[in-house]
Image 1 (cartoon, rainbow, N blue to C red):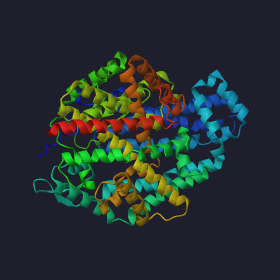
Image 2: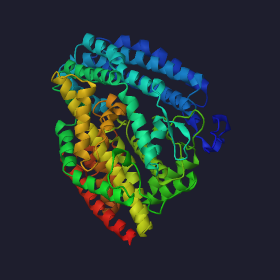
Image 3: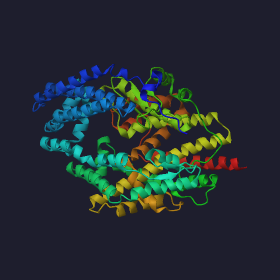
Image 4: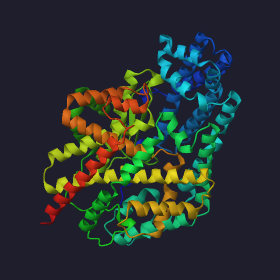
Length: 600
C-alpha cells in the first residue's frame, strides 16, 4: 500500500528549500511588486527619443532593472505555489505578477521597433561603445532581426496577440490536465486502478504484460475518442506558428523557430539524417531487450519494460547526493564545493508532499542562487535526476556569477547540455566502480535507454513537427487521419522490428511539447554535445574541464553554437551527432556481449 503523503506543513524544515534567500517574507515581495509597478509608467518618457545615446542607455537600464525584479517576483511566487499547488494565496501572487509582467512587456514594446528605425551605422556605433557593453549582444541580435521586425504598431499588435496565439496550448493543457479522464484498469493484483498521466509509464514498466497492454489500449483508446477535438487544437497551434513566421517574413515556421538562437535549418535536418542512419542499432538494442525479457514478438507496449539484470542502486537522498558529488569530482574542486554548499544551505526541495508539483526542475533568480525541486525515490533514475538538475544549477551559477544580467540567461538550445554531461559522467563513473557483468549490463542499459528516449525518440518527434508544419504551409488539412498517418509512418520507420499497434498512431496527441514548436530537437542535439564533452573530460582531464567551464560561464554573451565551440563541440557540423551515434553503436555491441555472458 502506498505511503500517505505528508502535508507541506508536516515536512521538516531541513528537508525543504530555503526560498527566504530570494525574499525573506511576503512583505519584501510586495515591496518589490510595488517597485516594478511604479517603474512601468516611466517608459513613456523615452518614447521617440532613443536616437540619443544617453537616453537609449537610460531606457535600456530601466528595462533591465524592471525585468530583473519582475523575474525574481515571478520565480518566488511560482516556486512557493509549487510547494503546494492548492495554496490560493500563492496562486494569487502568480496571477498578479503574470499580469504585471504582461503590462511591463507592453510598455517596453516600442523600444525594439523604434531602435530599428535608426540607422544601422548608429546601432553599430552604440554597440561598440564601452558604456553599452552589457547590451552588445542584445544590440547585435537587434540588428540581425532587422529584416523580421515590423513597425511599432504592428509589433504592438503582435505582442497583444501572443496570449491569443498561445491559446491552443492553454486549451490543450486544461483538456489533458483537468478534463481528460482515463478509465480504470486492473493492476498486477487484479485491483481496479484509475489510469493517469503519472502512472502510465509505471504501468508500461510492469512485469505483467497484460497490464502493459491494458494501460496502452486504455490510454490511446481514450485519445482516439477525441479524434476531432485534439487534432483541431493542434491544428490551431500549428496555424499560429505559421502565422507568426509569415508575419515576420520567414520562409517557414521551422526557420522562424530556429532564428532566435541563430541556428541554421541545416542543423535540424542533419540531425534527422544522422539519426535515420542508425535505426538498425536502435532495433538491435530493442531486440536484445526482447530476448532478455522473453518476448518473441515485441509490441509498442513492451518498449518501456527494463530487463531484470540483477543489479540496482537504491540510496537515501543524502547518500545519493553524496555519491553524485563524488562522481562529479572530475569537474574540479570548485564544482564539487558548490554541490556541497547547495546541500548544506538548502537549495534543494527533495521529497514529495501533498499538493507539490510533480517531476523535477532547476530554477532561480539572478540575485539569488539556483534551486532544485525533485520528488526523490530511492533508485538510479532519481539519482540521475539529481545529477541532471544540479547540472542545470551549476550552469546557471557559473553564468550568473560571470556575466551581467543581460548576458546571463543561456539559450534553450544549450540548456540540456550541462545537465546531461552530469548524467553521463555519473553513469560512466558508476561503470568504472561496478565491474561485475550484472552491473555493467544494467548501467549500459540505462545509458542506451537514455539515447533511445532522448536522441531517437525526440528526433522522431522533430520529424513529426517538421511534417505537420510543412503540411499547413502547403495547404494540406491537419486532421486525425492525416496526422495519424504521419505519426504511424514514423513509428514504422524508427521501430521496424515491432509488431505494429494501430493505437500508436494516436500517441502524438499526448505529447505536450508539440505546443512549443520545434523545441524537442534540442534534447537530441544537447545529448549529442554532452556525450562529446563528457568523452573529452574523461579522456583529457583538466584541459577539457577548463574548456567546458568556459562554456558554462558564457551565458548568452555569444550565440549558442559559438558557446558550444568554447567547449570544443561544433554543432554546425553533423560530426558531434554522428560521433554520439557511433558511441551508441559501440555501447549496443558491448551490451550484447555482456548480456550474452549473463546467460551462461
